[in-house]
Each structure stands twice: as C-alpha cells, then as structure tokens.
Length: 528
Ligand code: HEM
Image (tube, rainbow, N blue to C red):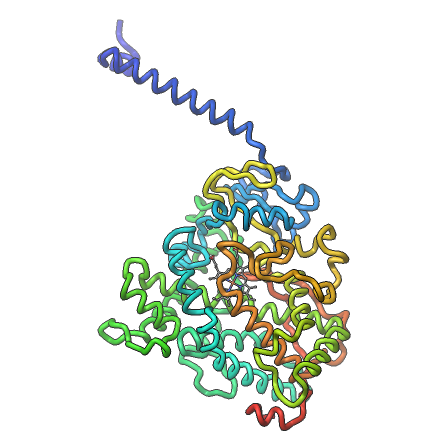
C-alpha cells in the first residue's frame, strides 16, 4: 500500500533508541509546560480591573495617567495589576508598599524596562535614568555623584548659580517695572537651564543682561521645549511590534527630535576636543562635566563611548530643567492662591535675612517655613508623579502578592500625596503640617517621595533642592509678586499638563515690584 505519511515513513528509518529519546523529551516538555501552567494559575497576583483584549488597560490611562491610576487605586486597592499593552504592570499607591518596592526589595526592583522611546531618544536607553541596573549604570551614577553634585562640585558651581539668579532677578524686576505681568515660566526655565548648561559645558542659551548667549540658542530652546512636551505614553511604547506602523507619526517625530538633539550634543562634545579628536586638557579645578566625562573616556573607552557622554548631557539637561523650574512654578501658583501663606514666607525671610542684604545659600537651613512650603508643593505636585518605571528582574512578592519577573512597577507618589488615609485634609495646601515634623524629601519617608528612594533615587536631588530653595527664597525676598489686574486667587488654575514631567498647564504671569531698599539691589549689582 502506498504510504501517505512520509514523516512516519521517515521515522521508521530512525533507530529505536533515538525514537524513545524523542518521545521521552516530548513527554518531559509537555509535563514541564503543564507544570508551569499549573504553577502560573497558583500565583497570587494582585487584583486589577478587567482589561480589553490586546490593548489591556491602556484606554484607562487618559491624558493624565497618574490621576487615572489614583482613581483606579481607590477602586482596586493600593496594589493593583494592569496590562499596559503587552507589558504586565503593577501600580503601588501606599507608603508601606512603596517602602517594600524602593527599600526592602530595592535590589530586585531597581532595574528599568526597555523603553521604545529611549531606544530612539536616549541612544538605545544608555542614559543613566533609563539604563537597566548594570555596571555602566553604576559607573555613570558614581561619576554624577562625585563630579557633578558632590559637596565640592556644588561649592565650585555656587558662583555660577548666584550670578545667573541675580541676572534673572534683574530681568524679572525690570520686566515688571511698568506693571506689565512677567512670564515666570519663561524666566525660571531660562534660569535653570543657564545654570545647568553653564556648569556642565560652559555655555548659556537664554539671554539676560549678559550678552554671551551661545550660537544656536534658538535651536536649543526649541529642542528643550520639544523634548519637555513629549509624552512617552504612545502606542508603540506599549506595542513594540506596531512600531513599523508609526501610528500618528510619533516615531518619525521622535527620530527627528533625536537627530536634532544628537547634532547639538555632538557639537558640545566637539567643543571639548582638539581638531585631531584628542581631548582639550584642562586642570582638574577648571573641568566642566563634559571635560570630566572625556577624561573618564580616555581611561575606559569601551564603557564611556561618545554615545554614553551624549546621553549623559541629555540626562542632566532634561533631568534638571523639566523638574526644578516646574516645581518653582507650582510653589508660586500655590502662593498666589493663598496670599496669607505668601505673607508668612516673606515675614520669615525678613526676620531671618532682614532687608539690608540678599539671601545667601547658607540661609536656607534657617528658613523652616519656606522649606515646609516646598514640601507641601512636592506632596501635591510631584513633577514625576509615577517616578520613572521600575522593573523586577526576578520573581518577587510585594504586599503578599506574587510579582513575576519582568513586571513593570510604578509607584504613584501623586496618589500617596493625596490619600486621606495618609494625610489629614490632603487637598488643602497647608505647609504648617510639616512644621515640627521629621518628614523629609530625601527618600527616607515613604509618604513623600518627590525624588524617589533607594538605588534609583534621583542622583541630583541635592542640586535640585538647592536650585529650587534658593530660587524661591531670592524671588520672594526681593520681589513683591501679585496677580495681573482683574484676577483673584480663586482664578489661579491648578490644571496639569503631562509631558516629560507634569507641569502647570497655564503660563504663570505675575506683576512684580521691588520689596527691598534700592541700595540693596545696587550693592548686589542688580540695576533697576
Ligand atoms: C526638583 C528637582 C528634581 C526632581 C523633583 C527630581 C526627581 C526625580 C525622580 C522622581 C527620579 C526618578 C526616581 C526613580 O525612578 O525611582 C529622578 C531620577 C533622576 N534624576 Fe532627578 N529630579 C530633580 C533634579 C535633578 C537634577 C538637578 C539632576 C542632575 C544631575 C537629576 C538627575 C537625575 C537622574 C540622572 C536620574 C536617574 C537616576 C537613575 O535612574 O539612577 N535630577 N529624579
């Protein structure tokens, strides 16, 4: 009879012992898969809302994911599970669970997922903030800690910070002279970026009275705006297999942006090298951050490639600009809503500093009310409300639930900051709650985590704090600020806008007049 099963006929040619082996392996494989499935069904996963086929829960995130996730927590609990496209995700919304994630199990949960946007925008996720937990990340974090934000380096950069701050004050005060409202968003973004780029690579891109604005300033400003406005919640981030469709043209836009950014970072790098590509030697005390990275590159060319340096330049520009100025704006907006708190801050400044000199960075330790105001703004308006997503590298348990390896973990600090089980009258802006309280923002108190905590905690938090505290203290001490004519405190909107960070949706425009005697400004070199 004709054989209609060629495979069987081929099998017949295989010696018997081999057939037994194949069958045994197949049975073992099936057994293993069944066991895995049974184990899987035994996992105690966190609860979660019912999702849709394919897209999971993406449709529930809306324009402000941190707000939507807070509402979901109210329904599904302080730990719940979602599927963001194809990625299993767990959202944490209580201080105790945040401690488990960021402290107790930190070593297993401090990695990062692979971001599609980071592949395009951050040289294949090579920036310190996006890179997984690996040796390069350790190396870069150490360099930033010792060479950018150490006490010694912060002391070295003090004069740059002060100079830029005084120039900005002059700009704000002269701008407001004729009663014209001053755009604080623009002024404070420029301030923080000038401080950052001057210290990191000796250039400034925003004009004040100084005329040394670098070539390409406009392009730089556009770039910062575009990156800041980019939301990383887009389809291909959650369905990498759909990337080729370039839905909404997002990927094309990101690629264009990445190209423009790369040209800019390359020019910064080139300005630190001779024409033959060798590094321009500078004495250690005279080195900026890029000089420092170049010297490390000489010693470890395989770890510190040009791409790693460019990713680091991008990291410090974005990390400092999209956070510090946005935080200052939230504080000023809250003070405009509650003039009695503004008066209280200014009373403290007048008592501690007086009206015969300007604030110095060393005064900040003696301004507890100002620092309490800032904590209150961090509580209600964390600019990175979901931190940067973490990822488990191994199976772990959180809150008694099983969290399989490769699950994304988000800590919703916004939800924690507004939880009535954690804070009394959580929606009130009441700095008094922090007076006499030991709660701080340095990653030890899990009810207040504006910088995160643990291994992935913001590596520049001390610089960020210094920038924000000083900026606010100087502005509130030297300027009387008030709302434009016709506006009352209740007109001040707290609507948010989600991009690279969560900023205030409206531009903050305020009237400004000097509040110190004229000779104090003259002595500080501020010409009014
Ligand atoms: C008010 C100012 C700032 C705020 C609120 C802030 C907040 C944060 C937050 C929430 C994270 C994520 C933590 C996590 O994923 O668990 C972070 C990470 C980071 N921040 Fe900041 N930041 C500020 C200023 C700065 C400054 C001035 C720098 C400059 C060096 C900086 C550099 C970084 C870097 C490099 C990371 C990534 C750390 C890592 O993944 O290991 N930040 N920041």
